[in-house]
Image 1 (spheres, rainbow, N blue to C red):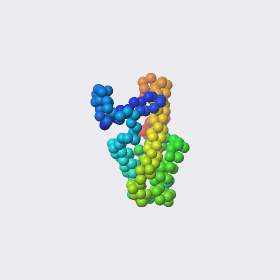
Image 2: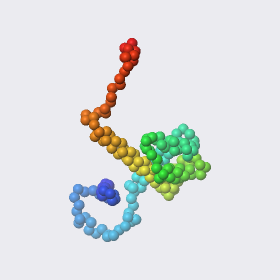
Image 3: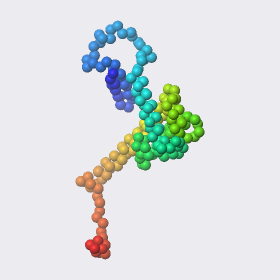
Image 4: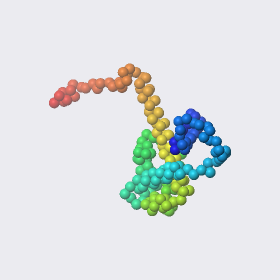
Length: 193
C-alpha cells in the first residue's frame, strides 16, 4: 500500500491510498470491478494498525506525565505538559483559549474515575477502554498537539520576521552593531592588576 497526498493550497488536502502501486496506470485492469462501491465495503486493516499505534503513543505519553507518581492533579498535569518538548516547551508561546479548553477536555477524558486527578488506575482503565473512549482521547490529544504546533509555527515566523528587520536596519555586514564600552581610567588600572 502507498499513500499519495495531493495538496490544494488554501483549500484542502486529499490523500489517495494506492493498494497496489504501479508506475503506469492501466485502465483495462479496472474492467469487471463493481462500480460505485462505498468505503464501508472494504476492510482497512493497515489503517486500523495506524490508529492502534496512535493510541499506544498517547497512552505512553500519558504514562510519562505521571512520572514516578501514582497520581497527579490537573495543575501538575498542565505544568508538566507546558514543559514537555512535544508540546512546545517554550515560555514565549502564548496559550490560546482553544488550547486551554482542549487541555481541560483532555484531562476530563484522562480522569476515568472522575476524582479530579490522573492516576495509574486511570491509565490502566484507558488501556482497557473501548474504541469510542480511546478515539475521543486520541482526538483531543492530537488536537492539542496540532494547536501547539500551529502556535509554535506562528512564533517561529514572527521571530524570523524580527531577524529580517534586524538584517534590513543597518549593520550592512549582517552582524549586530555593538558599541564598545568606554572604561574609566580607574577601571583600566584595576583590570591590569
